[in-house]
Image (cartoon, rainbow, N blue to C red):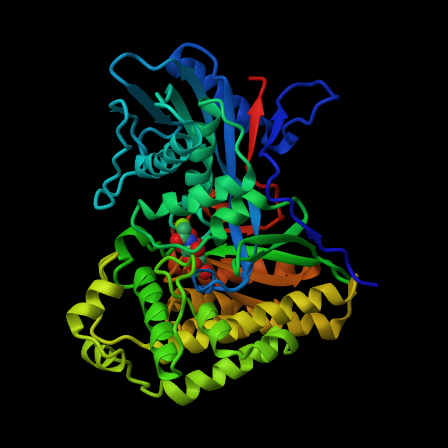
Length: 516
Ligand code: NG1
Ligand code: MG
């Protein structure tokens, strides 16, 4: 029997839950109760009254499909239980405009800030200043743009008093940024009395995060908003966004996902010109050069720079092939195309790419390398494109295997694990987004009994994810503790060790909590 996979209704509004003892309404999960109560009482101390509501959005773990969302290929993430909760009191706007007071429950790390927005003006975010409030400002910027479009006439946004508590480790690969931006945008929408749909929140949050300077795809925000407890979120971006809740089938020894931090942090906003954004540019350039070589014209799509590898695949296939060949098979022929055409293992210089595209270097730079700064002498188009297409295929294979049976036998489980290991190998070699520490964690974990181990998120440090039988959790965590954490960080506290390795339980996406 097939396990049921449910299509997600995208126009549905963000859920509202109530923090009361009234059994007739949905209430906050007991495990969140304490953090929630603390937030409310600290808000009271800080501002001298209670908040009106709390906006919440979680971090995410990506099970498979790395660095392909911005090429519009399908990915398979889910929300985790760590999140950002944001208590808000609405204050009517003054005559001079809107004032935002924002504080954090950890003021020593995240100092309080106050800023105003003159009437009719946009929120200003300076991506060069790496400040925690930038992520709130980015969410607010997107929310106000949306409201201005929606509400004709002039919008005077309300003033807000805010207290934030986030327990998603920053720079840790489980998307503290998306949790923060989504919670912020949701808070601003609610404060201005707008019940936003999940789809609208997604659209504005993806664009919002670009204000911080990272040209991300939409995976993190989708997982943060749309996930459902107990399910993975199969997320599609082409031709437009669609999501499906995918159950994890039963197995003789319960399938468990463990996340392990490398504690190597990569501040993506800072390293983007050499890492993340460079990859986005390399994939875009690979798409247009492949298209040119095959005499195809790509129409602009909704990826960050307008041209994606998915788009190239679509154009390369004849109508017949698109109709009759399974997607897996179509991807195989695109892989062949890359192997035949992008032959330079050592990469391509700007001059070489300009020649291939029949344009000057200046034209190339203004068309493809000016939306954000990129630092590179050579662009490794072949390796990046091969990673993306092969990873896209692995996602399809992984999903198909999950859908095949409501109970997985040993052979299928090993196959899933193998796909995860292959993904890691490709990230390490072809995409060059792993880190020695991440590779080491994966090796230790596999030796101790995982089925599959890989990095999750952008990489270059950050977090790893492991698929393992419940019965091996003890052995794997002990091995990681002794062979990685205690060796690399001899002074590590018990507290930090506890945060380092967490069993990831697929959790619910964004919601608003009332009844403080
Ligand atoms: P992280 O760095 O973990 O937030 C980033 C992107 C995703 C996706 C992954 C790689 C942002 C907000 N997120 O995740 O969209 O491209 O890398 O698969 O930049
Ligand atoms: Mg992020």
